[in-house]
View (tube, rainbow, N blue to C red):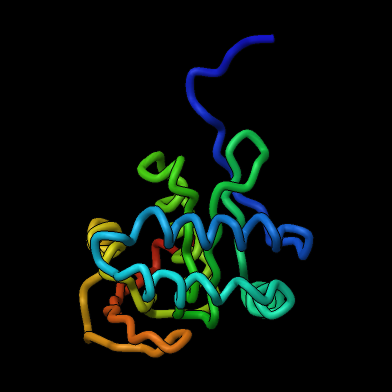
Length: 168
C-alpha cells in the first residue's frame, strides 16, 4: 500500500444516510470557525438548525445538495436552493483551506449556469465573506436574521455567472 502525498477530493450527491454526519459538520463548522464574529449564544442558535435531523434532511433533500469527500469520507457539503441561490455551504474545520469549499462553490456555479442561472447569490456569514470575495462574489446588502431567539448578521453576496461556466 502506498501513502498518498495529497488527499483525493471528490463530489457526490447527498444521500439521506449522510444526514447525521452532515449535521456534525454543520455544527463543528459554526462552533470552530465563527467565534471571532458571533457570540456563543448566536453560534448555539445558528447550530440548532441541525438539531432536528429529520427537518435538516428534508432541507438538504429538497435542494440540489453535493457532498465533498476526501478519500471517500464526507468532509463538507453545499446546497443550491434554486438555480441561483446557495443555501448552505459548510466544510469541516479540519480541512478548511484545502480546496473542498472552492470545489463545492465551483460545482454549484457550473450547475446553476447549466440550469439557466445568470447569477449566484448567497447569504454569507461575516466569517465566510473573504472566502466568497476570493471567488468573485461581491456584497449586495447587509441582513439581520432571527435564529433560535438570537439576531445574526450576514451579507447577501452575488456573482455573475459566465456562459463558460455552463460549458465547463
